[in-house]
Length: 173
Image 1 (cartoon, rainbow, N blue to C red):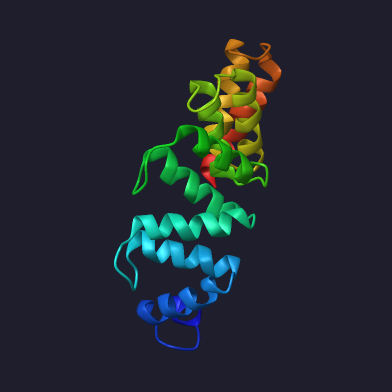
Image 2: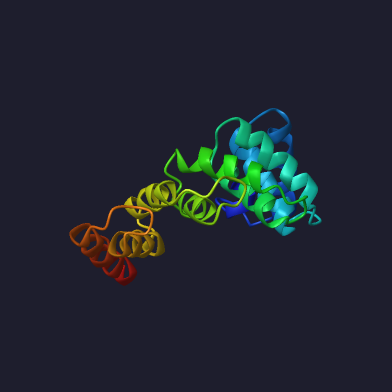
């Protein structure tokens, strides 16, 4: 991490990747994630999306929410791997259960649109509310809209107004 962040030394992505790889191979979850990021973006190493997926998966299996989210995005978009909407939804959910705001937001969209899961607007509203509670402004707007229209959830103007106000404040921060 010292080489990656330039803490106490000059930034050197190649050295950082080398040390992350060593620690990743020893099962260090954070290093697996950091090495995957470097492989994904080509920082200090050649871009290698399939290898990035492998290391994201290893960190994901150990429960790291950020890795679970990144793996889900790769599977959702087919970025370097085969598209697998069902598996993407499963990884979004694992990260969302740990209150990862972007994972919860994406999972809301997965349920709203029925991508890899049966469409379920009540679950969409739930996950957007989780993301909203973690500060995700667009999720707040989505919940507010669903409550205003009674879209898959009971219409509730008071709660709708709450989420719209919260979204407006969140965007100012």
